[in-house]
Amino acid sequence: MAGAQLTIFENLPFLSCLNLNWKETAMRKSFYASQSVYSEPGPYRETLMGGGVEPKSIARWISSFMQHPRGAESEERGFKPEQAADLELRSVEEILSVAVKRNLLEGDCQQHKVGGVCRDSL
Image 1 (tube, rainbow, N blue to C red):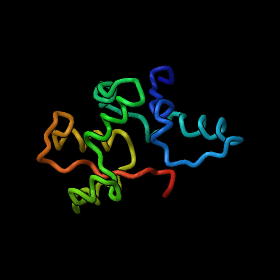
Image 2 (image 1 turned 45 degrees about the vertical axis):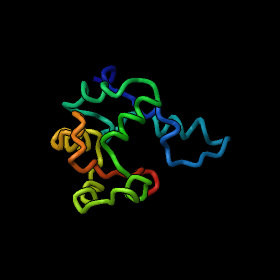
Image 3 (image 1 turned 120 degrees about the vertical axis):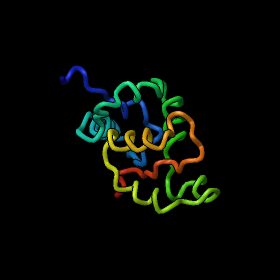
Image 4 (image 1 turned 90 degrees about the vertical axis):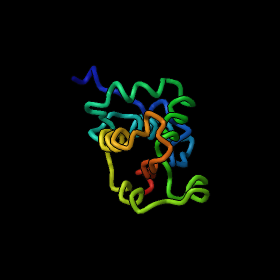
């Protein structure tokens, strides 16, 4: 099973909330890029791969269904109680499950995006 695990976050250095000291970069990158129970997509592996492999396409894909409570989009559209409850979601599997239930991956812009924040700053 270890060979089948995905390490998505190694391709997302610009999405990190970390302010890395250049001496600590290598250690921290490997730590935050490592696979964990929280980054396992479960039954949504194929869905996750739909986001592409390039960092910019992955970021664009994630932004299409997730919204930060203090981001520009929240200032424009607001951040609903349903999205505040989403902040308790921890795993990629849970987040994608909600995105699928709300039909967000199909482009349903009538639904509220999944609320989310960086976990390394909490």
